Image (cartoon, rainbow, N blue to C red):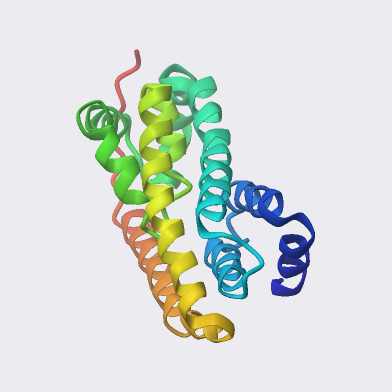
Length: 203
């Protein structure tokens, strides 16, 4: 994967960075660590400047997250209710859980979106509930961009200072991501195994 990412960055410059960051958020298997890390390496080599690199990366990240936000807004609470009532067991979600999440986003939406930008397994998917629970588009955009800017600066800074040794980050970032995913899977399996059917109240 890294070869074509490098080629696209070198060919497209900042536009290539922005495009890849959009893809990274729509198709999570493309890692932002790699994209912004390579951008940081290019800054160290004198082929890019840090400020426009961060602007391009942050714009791309925000647009990519906007895709999931808009999808959530289109579905809305009314749109997902029949799905939750029918497939709640598979999702290990009851409608009251969804209502609780709705209240959380109403009170702490900015903090949730901002903090989740630093979590490997959640930084993209958090945009979907932000849309579902009708978080303000302006608030969503501002806090997504703020978190993305800081995260991208960290990654680009690592690439800048580590240079060609940036791949060493994968030695510890990779396992951390895998542990997060494993914990999510374990938690899901546990909830599924201990699930008890309870009648949901129809609207």
